[in-house]
Amino acid sequence: MKARTRIMQTPDLGLPPTRTVNPELHRGSTVYFDSYADLRSAGLGEYGGVTYGTDRLPQQRILEKAIGELEGAALTRVFPSGISAISETLLAFVQGGDHLLVCDNVYGPTLRFCREVLGKFGVQTDTVPGNAGADIAGYLRPNTRLIFLESPGSNTFEIQDIPAITGIARERGILTVLDNTWATPLFLDPFALGVDISIHSVTKYLSGHSDVLMGSVSTTAEHAQTLDKAYACREIYGSPDDCMLTLRGLKTLHVRMREHFASALKVAQCLQDHPLVGDVLYPPLPSHPEHHLWKRDFSGASGLFGITLRHEYAPEALGAFLDSLGLFGMGFSWGGYKSLITAGVPARNLGGRHHGQTIIRLHIGLEDPEDLMVDLRHGLSLLEKQTPLE
Image 1 (spheres, rainbow, N blue to C red):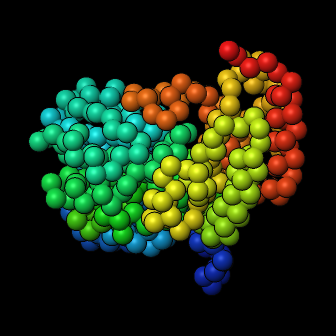
Image 2: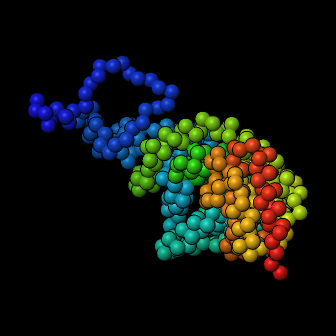
Image 3: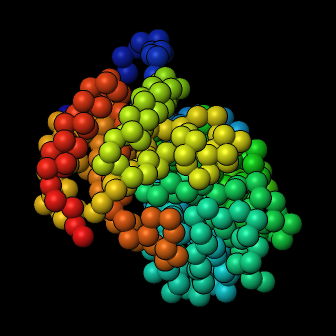
C-alpha cells in the first residue's frame, strides 16, 4: 500500500471498547454504512441509525433524550440557539393566513421574528398583556392558530395564568407554546399545565457555564410528528461540542438551580429594603403582583429578577452605580455561574406596570450572596450621591 493511501486509513489499535463516564464525542459529516443494504435503507428513510452529520449525531440524540426525559416530553429536538429553537417551532406550526398571539413581555427577538419574518408570509401577530389569563379570550380570532407565552416574561417578570390560557386554547384547537427558560423543567412543568410545546434557551441554565449557544423544543405526542418532520426538512442541528458541554451542565442543574434560587431570594429581599429601590420584580416575593400564580404553579425560581429605582437617573449617574460593581459582569444573557447585570427601558407595545421605567436586571450567580449584597450596597451608595432626574 502506497504511503498516500496508507495515511488515509484509520489505524486499528486492537483495543477493547473504551468506556468513559461521559459519552464519546463524534464530529463529522460522512457516516459509514456497514452494507449496501443499510445504504438503501437510509435512502428509503427506514434506517435506524445516523445517516449523516446533520442527522443528529449521537451526542445530540443523547442530549435530546436527556432533556426530553427531564421535561416529560414525547419528542425533543435541539437547535444552535434559543432564537433558532423559537423560530423553527413557529415555522413548523404556522402558515400564511394564521393569527398568532404573543405575550407583550416575551424575549424581544421572538416578537421581531413573528412580525418581520412571519409577517412577510401572511401571518398576523398581536400582543397580549404580560399578565394575561382568562381575558385572553377577548384577543382570539377565528384564525388564531398559536399562543406564545413566556412566564415570567423578559425584563419585567409578569406571570401569565397558564392553566387558564391553555384551557381556553385547547377548547378552540389553538396550540400553546411556552418559553420556560427562567424556571427550567425543575421548577415548572408546562405539560402538566396544559402547554403543548416547551422551549428553552439551553444557552442559559441547562448548560450553565456561559460557553454554549443552544435551544431546545419539547412537545407532547400530539404534535411530535410535525416537529420531527420540520426538523428533518431544515436540518438546523446542534453543535456536537455544545451538546457535550450541555450534557455536562445538566448533571449539576439541580444543584445549581437550588443555589441560584436561595441566593437570589436573599439578594432580592435585601434590595427590597433599600431606600433607593422602588420595586423588586421577583415572583417569589409576596410583593410581586402575580406571587399567587408563582406559588400555585412553580416549585422554585431562578436567579434572574429586576428592580426599578424610586427615581430615574441620567445615564452617567446610573453608570456610577453599574460601573462600580466588582462582582457583577455587565453583559447580555444569564443562567451561568457568574453574576450579571444590565439596565434599560424595555420596549413594550401595551405599556404595562413599568412602562417607560428603567429596569435593572440582575442574574444572581453562584458567588456568596453576602458578597454580592456588599457589592450592590456599595454601588447604590455611589448612586445616592447623584442627582435624580425631575
